[in-house]
Image (cartoon, rainbow, N blue to C red; front, side, top):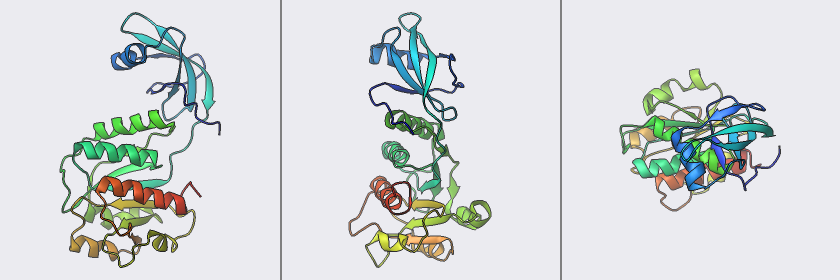
Length: 250
């Protein structure tokens, strides 16, 4: 696959993309290109929509506050969503924004909020989560925008797992593991097995939740080293270890 062109601005759009397609920009997008980046008529932008690959497009200025884009040639074909799901207890606003962005950068193909006993935030703004996911895709050359799931209670998630997920293994980041080495847990798994990673809230899982998780045949507990990590830091650490051992870094 061709490498991502880092020198050009990159923009997510909803419209279909093909040679000659004309893309009308909304006010925020026009302001970003014209006033923030100070682009001029004919300047180039990279476009993607998560379906049709990435396209080089030319800016058409239509006034001081409005612009459109005309797609030219494809720079990269569409990539599939990564088959790595990231499950997490929702955090408060700023840390949730950070965690969503980093999970996308680390190659999560689905973001799935899970409500636990000590979850900090009972309400999840899915539109804001998607906006942060799209922003991470724009900034880091990601072509496939991750799916954003509705929140689900931990007990309901586990009860329906095998019916809905099939052979997918749930890697449960468990701070109560006797070992501190995450690689020992992952060595039990085969390369190519579908995976999901679960990180709990700042207060951790309750003992009842830990017992319930460890009783499931599809759950693999994994420690994250000897230090206490905040939930958003644990997201990056867990996804990095999994990607390096069993994911698309291998």
